[in-house]
Image 1 (cartoon, rainbow, N blue to C red):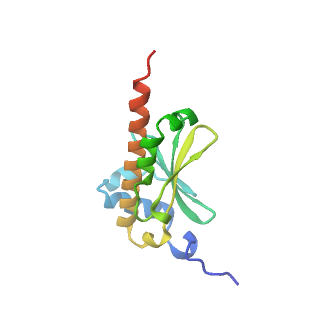
Image 2 (tube, rainbow, N blue to C red):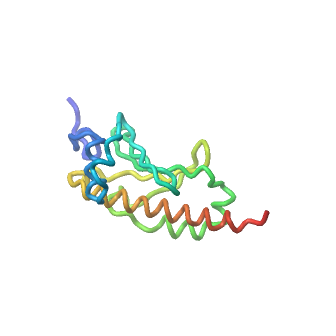
Image 3 (cartoon, rainbow, N blue to C red):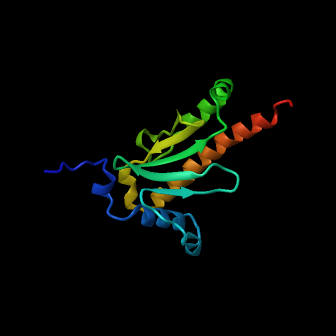
Length: 153
């Protein structure tokens, strides 16, 4: 007997991740003809011109959003802790605990967020969540870019 979990992606959402992301991006105004190359097994990568990509993936039957910041270092985080703390403390509705976290990765750091599965019944919700996560990635990237360009050579 399988126990029903309110946190399970597969038990609570019966469309593919590809379909879910396509509908979310369309709700943000992305033309449908631009979405022809989305392929998904368990991850979808959204690429941007000047920002780290955003990945949506299903891990342990939970939906995650994350972005890799390969140029972030422990020293930089320590030096810019107050700016980064302010950015990280701004809530993102539709996430578990409304928070994204910065975690150490193999190369650099990653901003990770666990999606509140109950929001997935509306593509607009995931669209708003992707937009909010993108804004947080952009804010962190601006701190990184601003301080890296100020370094003397």
